[in-house]
Length: 182
Length: 198
Image (cartoon, chains in turn purple, yellow):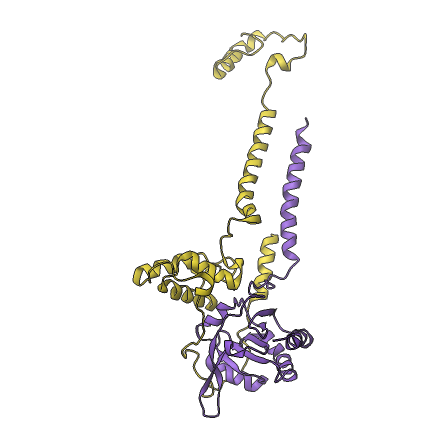
């Protein structure tokens, strides 16, 4: 049996397999990592708000006390350009669905002195929560910002947006959850 | 090259832009190191701690071991133990917190996998398609060795009686070359297969 063609075939199969594996890697966004938390209970948190209440104190938001309405949790940071770009959209969706859902921004690894100034500059539409030590971000498996989790009335994570959200994309998901029976 | 390109692209996409100009207002912002109210009890996910609480050198060693098995989520191929990034440091602190409570290595890995997915593990678990990761290199080496052996066997010099055409008779060795031929025979340690002698 001639060896040349056989060796060539082996080489082609090995090289073709390698190229196929690498090519498949180019067909998806490396940031678009599916969250294993979808359709799982949202990790609970009790985080202090950046904003002070009427008595000048920080309030605490506990997720488990928000059952009965969809909750949107948006992880963001002042150093994140896409966060700045999506901020008007997040505010617009929160305003559109006000009273039927709850929106929270969770600060992700940021300088304390930068946050309030950033919000004053770019606008704020809902409470901002402080995640000291990034424990909540870790519990939600946050790879980067912005990442937005949509939690249904029963406390189940139903959707995760990686990167900036669109008005229609986020509003349609939250609206559908509002319509669901609690 | 493709891998390098992919990694480079991923790095470029993952690189945050910390230079966004913002006005600062230190008085208005409360400190981030306020007591965290995050409820990150891993017990519902991984069960109660499997071992005793750790402190001191045992805690440091366990933290280092577990952190070395976790992938830094914002780096390229670096473990949490090796990365100085804020994300990696935060995860390392979380590992230390869990290990101090007595959660085992497997429990810690399971906890992070539950939130980040299997991507957070530097070593894929040996199950399902992941076996390919472990078996493919060994398989490729075996195929390569088999190919080389096959080719070497194919190129082995044939015996003179097999190689020579039927009826072929070796020409006599010229007398003036005989000493050199004898030296060659001596160096290879045997007379030629066709029985010629110098």
